[in-house]
Length: 361
View (cartoon, rainbow, N blue to C red):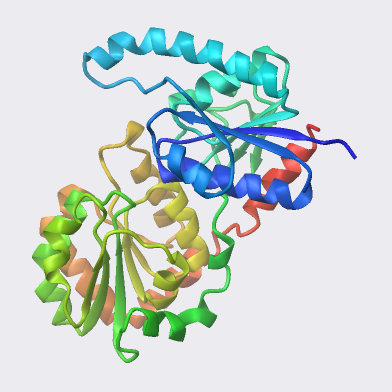
């Protein structure tokens, strides 16, 4: 049997790292003797998360362009040239059969170098609005695995495969874990539970909203799991009380999803894909501070299918309490949102992506 070799590159945020790890894990299941190497950006979170998942990683000296004139931007051409050279060296040394990119700064030079060396490349695009790196790389890529339809005006149509985003497999059957999850968080099984997700680092505007609305929410007989993020935990831990659990980071996502009846979340691509599988009523509050406003576009795709509610940050002060109260009082609306978002789930995404990779071996 051939001893296959795979290089995976993706990073900067969990939304790029976890899909890459999920793809590697599935490839490892199918090819137990395969060799794996990850390539990331130096001093980004992938340098910790990938070794924790049991894989080797090499770091490139690369960062994205800032939106204003900075020393970082002046250094960009040098960083890019250095990273391209280093990527060529890594590819020459490791000799991969296929290179897979899941987005983030490091995947640019790496996939560019792989394409130039005649090595097959696969892009996994998580968002409904692709970033500049993947748009540039798509011209040479062999396959482009996407999570949303209608991306033909960004990518060559003949290369697009609708696969969905890789998600944690422990989310597939969360209903069976509900009692265990309620007990784990010490919650009241007779109360409805609101889950607030701000991403691993946290979301300042979402935290400010929950702080402002906390008493109003509790008066509607709900209990809250509030993931405020590592950056903000010291500011908000004082709100820990009988019916409020304030946490910085969530290790057991399956438990919080199982415990939740209603969810408030940012609209990063991985979160949206997970929430489709989880199938609970969601109020999306997209971050406006991301490239091309892609979180709003991710959330809008779900809203268009009548599967979620979208509130922009600019609407929170005037609309949130009205929208939230109406949703909590309307069990029919909750059921309808659940049923519609679940229809969009693609639980086999990782396996489908690996099938595309196998075609190139």
